[in-house]
Image 1: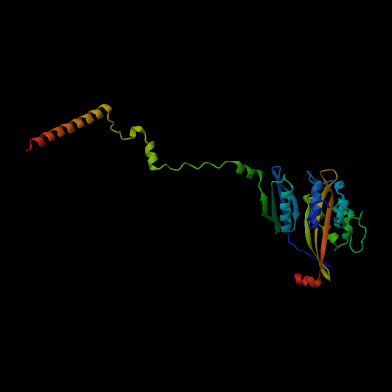
Image 2: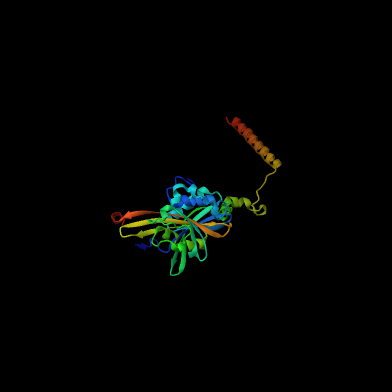
Length: 144
Length: 155
C-alpha cells in the first residue's frame, strides 16, 4: 500500500473577525470546504462580523498568503461607512452670481430720479402737448 | 443528531457539534463531548489524550469504522502504535499541528492500494480539561473506496 499526496504545501486558513480582532478559526486543505465553513460561520454566529479565507503557500521555505474569499465588514469598515462623506467643494459661481457679489462701491451708480422732478417733467410734457394742440386747432380755424 | 442534520459531510457535522460544545470558549471541555449524542457518527470518531512527547498521546476512544479490518481495540494505546497506512494513521498524522495552532484542522487525501484508491477526509479539533490548555483532541474521519475500474474512469 502506498500513499500519495493530494495537495501540495498549500492550506486555507479560515479567519474570523469579532470583538474587534481577527483570529484564526480553522484550517483546511480544500478551498471549497474552507469557504463553505466561512459562510456557515457568518450565518450561525452573530458575533462574527466578517470572515476571510486565506490561502497560505510555502515556497522555498517562505510563506506567501493571499485572500481567496471574504464576507462581512470589520469595525473599521463600519466606521468608515457611518462617517458622512466629505462635502464637495462649492462649484465656481457663474458670472451672474459674481456680479451680484461685487461690492456696492465697485458697482456702476444708477442715476436715480427724484419723485418731484419726475412729476414736474410729466406736467411740463402735458402742458406742451396741450399748447401744441390748442395752437394746432387755432391754425386749422384760420385756414379758409 | 446534533448540529445541522441537513449537513451531508461528516467533518462538518462533527465540527458543528464541536462548535456548539465550545460555546463562547475557545474550545470545549473533554467531558462535554458526548459520543452517544453523535449517533452513527460516533463510529467514525476518535478521542486522544495528549501526552508529552506527543507520540505517547493515547487513544481514549476509537470508533469501530476507524479500527481497521482487525478491529483491534486501540483505547489506551499510544497514537504511535496506530497501524501504519490506515485511515486512523492518516487521520492522526497531523496531531502536532493541532497543538501548534489550537484550532480545528481538516485534511483529506488518498491512499492507493493494489486494488483500489481510498479517498478520505478527516478532522481534528482541540479539547481542554482546564479551560485553557489543549489536553485532548476530538476527531473524525471517513473514506470512500474507489475500485480500480472506477479509478480509471475518474482519472
